[in-house]
Length: 342
Image 1 (cartoon, rainbow, N blue to C red):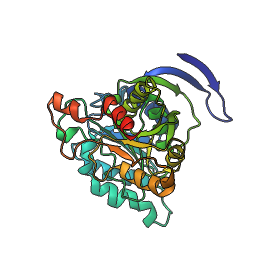
Image 2: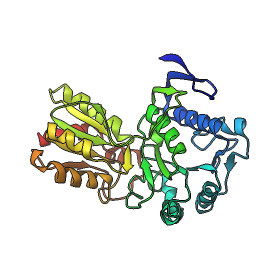
Image 3: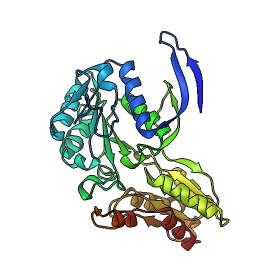
Image 4: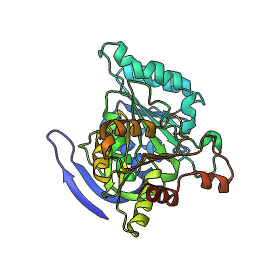
């Protein structure tokens, strides 16, 4: 699918909007390229993001167009280059940092939690901190326990940072562009297993805003399924199989983890009376705990059964393909959980 439309704004070079089928990876590259063209103060830093185009090719072609000054290969030192991003932001730049594996956010956790997230607040709002931290995570590709975490909930308890997790090419494109334009730090969690996923994206669009909360991907009246990142596709597949049995499941992509807006989910539960959450994380401390707590608080009288949380088991992910596949939530497990609650 491909449609063209010229968008002309006063004093701005005409932008050609092209809606086409692209991969999640290509959507990320397109967003980065457009925002770097739009603002010469936007740059990207990370390990192997230069001539090689990034370990997962999410910076493909950027080095050739923008050069080493704006597409900077860094040492293997997340604490150092994430800290440097704060200095760049304070001096008028819009740095984008790529963390090769989301697991490595632990290396630079102090810079994010105690410096980047707090700096604008501690200045009384006098300085801006437009920093984007992109981190690629997720299981299913045989990277083992130390390279397969989504890290979705690691920073949920830290005020001062936004956390978004796009689940398809369109959202990967739109949300990344909005994050780069934000004057506050944004953590963008991307999923390795989605990089080859194809879908329509409005390439060339210039009017972007950060979503305020969850979005309904499939309406339904018998159960509400809330999922994130790669689990969204699993939830949609489960809903399709349930539909064949006459069960209409509403599927919600949570997409924004901080600030967390549970109101649309509670509205859905008031219609369906059943809540199931699906996340690719261990059960303790996951975002689903907050969602369930808020739904119980806001819509307790509408629940026909206790909310169900589908998660990874409470131990590290194995390298073994058979074991890894068995532990990751599946459409079959999601569908069976919904039916058990009905």
